[in-house]
Image (cartoon, rainbow, N blue to C red; front, side, top):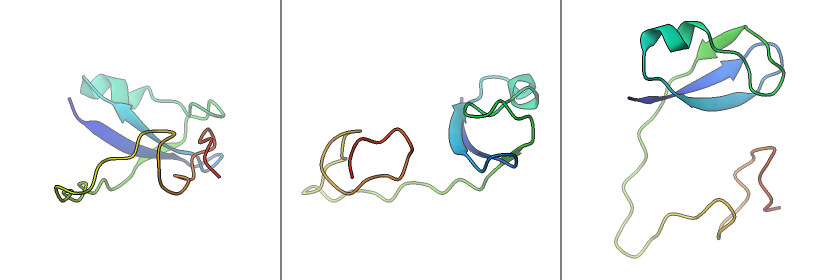
Length: 73
């Protein structure tokens, strides 16, 4: 069950979606505007972390992730 990256052509929103069945991908709509013009984006694997690094939490350390809902500035 892979997580795919998508982009909405109507409003430009980028989002991820867990796809369990291929039929689910055909019925996607934008979570922000409800638009139906959705394109699957190229997903790149995450870089491995060294033993001294840790993954930041949603509101943890590090810069803002850029998401509209991110509370870090």
